[in-house]
Length: 420
Length: 106
Image (cartoon, rainbow over all chains, first blue to last red):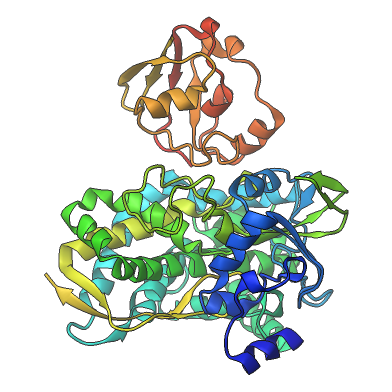
């Protein structure tokens, strides 16, 4: 807490190259909110790619900052566990533990993931494409012209909410509850915010859980469909999950957050980066076939989730460092995606980048993002429809970023849209 | 050089000359064979270079590793002849190797 007041007092973020390397702490949420984290990670990649920070508001932790090291840890799930904690801060136990499959090891993770994965696998998605396109068209056609508005609220949040409502077959008129619950669950002390964790828990267990329990019972009584709730309720291994409210809630949060914060912020980031890079915007307009490649580049450049954390299950010698059993190991995806040794000119946003799909934003190994195709699909369709309608999405002021070391996001992107 | 054949989902043949020692995935990418994404670049970490080995070639391409098995567990439409093409190394014995491509990678 002392460190935070330091930021307030100085009203500026120190230059990481002026700080002692041994105690460099890249986990401060203010770094990301002020978009000042890049230089911190550049120093770690250069001078201490596997770095031990002895003290932070989350306790001691290892930082893994290079692309290939991240892949190595992410795929070594037998020695680096996802059990219970997958972000830097520990979940305050025991009241707040909501088991979700992203935070489980095998075999339980596999059983639950495989149950709901068909809901977002390519075969299912190709059937959804037309429905999604209609939603995108409606959202874009309803935008005010020649009037400033917040792109995050009107487009990024609205589109991902509608998509998520479709994946859950959630009552459309109540869809705003989904981003609300998503925001409640990602506003937590475990990723660097100061928040009343008891109130957070109350909302999730009294509102979210109660609402979804009703949906569950309804779906369980109906024939199996391909929405998440129905897949869980009819899954051989998961049909009793309703009797384990904490685990039901945990998996709901996972699917809600997974479908909300990630694509929402990639949608916003596209507008931000195309405005920061007008040449790229010109390239896009003259060659819309670059859209799929641009989608990957946006996801790399933004890195919607800045990190994932593992816990060492045994002592491991890694790149000359001694990681001990029980240590927190943080894979900074946001740094891996800027690794100069793997990605050429990583700080540049290039929509026609070669090998754009090679980024670490989805993670690697058995916990790799399950909804990656849904995210890519939304971004692709959105940009196809934007190019048909608008000459430009003009950003009219600097964007505001959220306070978190986990969600790399925007709360406000002021824009004005210009019709073709 | 070793001749290998990829048959895409529509049934089109893509015959390429693969270099000894490279992976089947690399041979596909460097010859612009469609529907191989290879997001992780060949580290057996993403499952997006999925191919189906024609039955008569199965014994020649070797066994799946434990890691490859665990990645394939999370891939769509996996069959007993499913492999990740980044894990198959091109050798002279594979002259004429024929594999089928899935409709989409996941």
